[in-house]
Figure 1 (cartoon, rainbow, N blue to C red):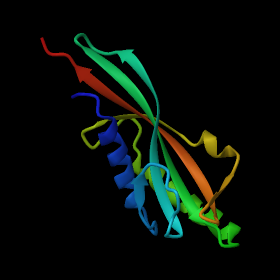
Figure 2 (figure 1 turned 45 degrees about the horizontal axis):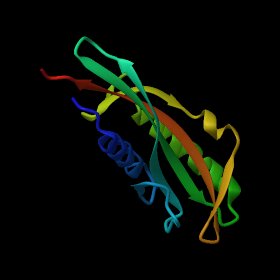
Figure 3 (figure 1 turned 30 degrees about the vertical axis):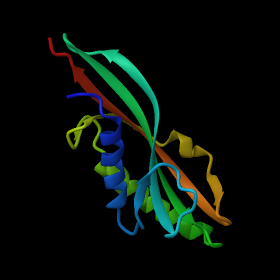
Figure 4 (figure 1 turned 120 degrees about the horizontal axis):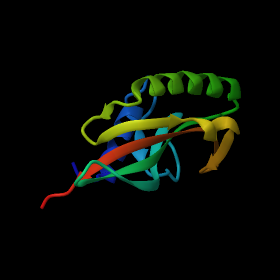
Length: 142
């Protein structure tokens, strides 16, 4: 297996897009969001680690964000996001392979401790970030 940042992002995006009641998902932060509920994936820091002999591991941090357009429905936004986060975390199985692109090593919702309300195209959204650490292995050939 080789390093594949795009493959990791696409695999996470596909999980987001399949959640119940979500309007869709994309890679990259949207300038504006049409549907009431949307997801997006961005890539963060990467840590290079020694792997088995002849290989190098890389832990890549991805941020998967769920966004809910408020329209003066803060309580509905929170309860909807709670359900979506539960469903999303259930699909991210720690220690298991995420399709063929790598192994999920860690999932953290610590960034969600302080609620984020973001304005996009004159609409306000409640955003809930989830950081996923995906380990990939690069096997060297001689």
